Image (cartoon, rainbow, N blue to C red; front, top):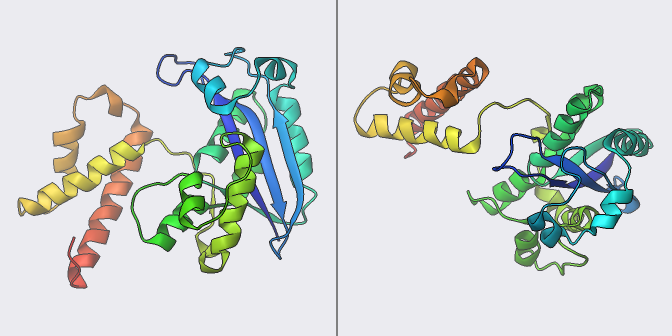
Length: 259
């Protein structure tokens, strides 16, 4: 089993345009079962919708516009990346959070390419693994994890290959405490973290008011008439999350835990 530590950079105007954010750089490091680095992949990608890098991304990454102008398009680069990945007899993607694989899947679909390869790929969210290891609740950056683990950061932050290399160092350092039974495959998600936090807070509020947490009450109080929740897939996912959190809270209560 090889471990492919993956990082991407993307470009667009997330809050100022309905056009999609696009992957503009892929970087990856291949580690063998002994956690030895055996190979690397790095490529820039020329975006379709925003051919010019926005000022924030240009400053954050330091990627020269002329390099983006000369880069290949997504279909060519992703085919090269899949061919590179396929050199491993078996592999697991290692990501820092879920955004990297999500962006690759979304761009694959945007270009009307087959997403089957990515939906079948196992990935392990190292950010969640690190949070479990440190027993904290807030997300942290790779840079903060390196500092906390007393690993000297090398390379340029926010360039995909350098970030993949740094993430690989965190992976090596805490490998022995990671639970790989928690590996995942990509699943479309229609709710965001803010909406899921709203569910948790609502359940706490109901319990504080000595109400039995019920989906009907939540839906009427928080969802009814709000355009944000017109997507039935989002509502269905939110209901599943509500029921799971309600069950989790009941289990904690029966076991004598507070919360």
